[in-house]
Each structure stands twice: as C-alpha cells, then as structure tokens.
Length: 250
Image 1 (tube, rainbow, N blue to C red):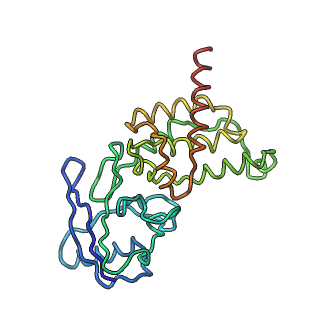
Image 2: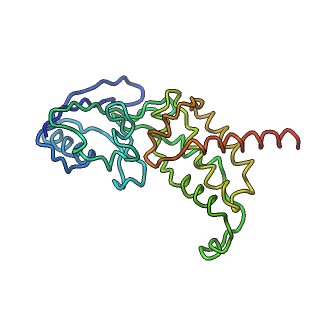
Image 3: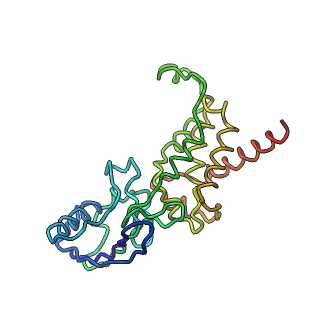
C-alpha cells in the first residue's frame, strides 16, 4: 500500500506545532501501525532528518503507552484496540492518515506525538495504599467475595491508564480513569478500609491536575481500548458523595 501521512511535529511544549506530510510507500498490510512508523523513521534517519517521536513499550496492548490520535480517534478506528495492535490492513491503498498526540491541557506535548501523562501517576499516588494485611495469593483466594463484585473489580482493574478517555472527551475529563482505579479497590473487602480517604484524595488530585468535568456523553467509554464502562463513574460519584457527607458529620 502507498499512503500519505499527515504527522503532527512539535519541538517541545513551549513551541507551536504543525502537520508535516510524509509518503509511506510499499506498506505491508501485515505491519502494525507502530511498525509502519518505525519504517518511516528509518527512512528519515537515512535522509539525515529527525525521527518522529512517539511513545511505545510492550506493543502487546498491555502497557498503554501507544497514545496516538489516528484520523481523529484515540487509538484509531477499531473498538477495544490499542494503537500497537492496529494493523495497516485496516486502511486502504491511497489513504491519507492524520496522526496527532493526545489533545488535553493536562497532557502537555513533550515532543511530536509524545505527551506528559505523569498527572495520572500523581492521581494514583494520591490514592495511597491498602493498609490491611492481605497475605499471599492463597490467603486472597480464601476470602469469600461475591462473584459479581469480583468480576466488576477485575473489569475495572483492566484499565491500562493510556489516557484515551481524556483524549476523547471534549472537556479533557479523566473521570473514567480515576473511577476505574477507585472501583477496582472499593469493590473488594481489602480495599474498603480506605474507601473514603481514597476517593476524596484522588478526586481532589484529579481536579488539581486540570482535568475537566464529565460531559455525560460517553465518548470516553467508546474510546477505551479495555472497554471500561461508565458504571465506574457512577460508583465513584456515589462514593465521593458519601465520603463528603461523612467528613461533614464527623
């Protein structure tokens, strides 16, 4: 396949950026999207030009690093698929593909397609830790947990923190991410001890990082490569309201 790529190039967060057009020739449909960019970068190196900076790590859909907006959609056209698992057979010969970084004020561009997502790390840190002794794996398996709660906790824990939910939201809201991290502990007995402190601290940190409010549109759920659901946001809101009321009455 021969493709035209419109790639966002930006030197750093303090400078403006612009789209630069590249021609991708003889692209194999079996290449992943990131492998296609690797080939482009090899050609740029051969011509003595600067490579396109983009994030990547596991390339197995697990780490959440492959943060690209492809033709206006975080992670590209396929539902529940990370950029690293997107293959070039998803496009047609002659297509023009526009590639941008996550667009959110809380995710400033570091360079080209790479953004700073350390705001997510600070939100996680603000949640603290589980204080009860959970023992080893056999001890965990000995604690009776309703199957429905265990399934919901597992689904929430599947969040890879890629930030596609933020990139898809017109308000740049991080509520799907934060609610998933809160839910996967709050649904289990080991995590209930710090329920109130955790939700208050993480929501406060989310606001401090400059993420917007939930739009109730659901674009975050649609863009999530791990299919995290809006139910988690509803659960987080209930926990937050309960924690605020408890703090006022105590």
